[in-house]
Length: 241
Image (cartoon, rainbow, N blue to C red; front, side, top):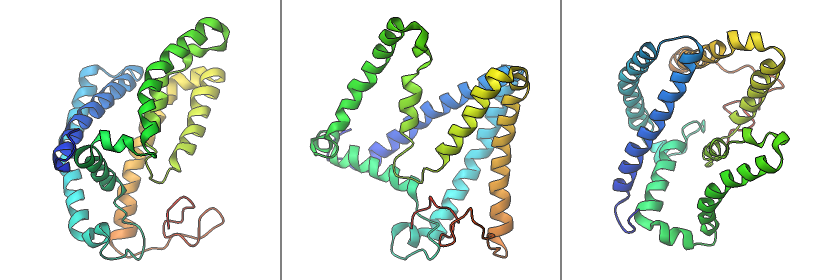
């Protein structure tokens, strides 16, 4: 947050502090899932510990492989013919390091584009108070179920990346947390968190299998049908050009 300084210092602080906050959230989330699945907190914590011990070196090796082999595409010196290596996440970290380190928040928020962002601090403080008074004024409207922290924290994920995932999350959340919770509660209690854990595990295994089977060896083209974009290498209507 010191203007005129090297962005690496601000970036390192953000990565370290941000990861501590993010991992604390992940621990609490997994502990809650373990509680509903009747798994002891000690067993849940040990599984989290093993996951981090295994995940850290693997993630580091993967990011080093990407940087070393795809550096021309990531730097923009060469054009990626497939448009798959955009480096959106590392670029967002770099931009934030420059914004808060080199430029500084004072100069950044003086700009006419980013100036209104300062009102976000006031909005974050006022939103819970407003919800509280709305609940007191209209007790039957269920304003007590509104959680401004969850709402605003979810909005931070929209920083320019492809944002086609939230739609499926909204649909899945409505089906599971509204329909099954209200009308099929016994089924929800028995299978909701079990299916959620299975879906997370299946996604990770599917990504690994797709990369190994369809990407690292013989290239296998994705079938073309009405549900995908024929002109996109990702076969996705949400992928950038």
